[in-house]
Length: 107
Image 1 (cartoon, rainbow, N blue to C red):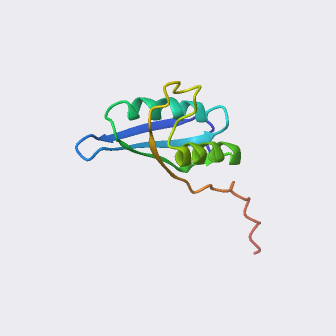
Image 2: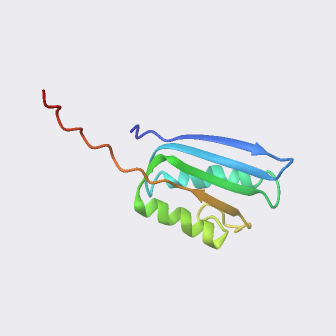
């Protein structure tokens, strides 16, 4: 798994939806980058439904908890959004386990 964080944003203003797709390794430090992107997407239109898709990323448990907390409170952390604008966040996560080495094949 690549540890570099790659973020893509898809926005559909007509339907009031935005999707932030992250790949790579999400840690408690790199999750802040996701928050900043989410804040920018949220500022495009009031009442935007925002989905954070981290299903193709390796997400540390603590970072996943942070994302879920933002989803439950409907606010981004105060250090990212001091105004605490309402933010409807859905987290799509499928925490993948690291690949195990396959045992050697017997002949």
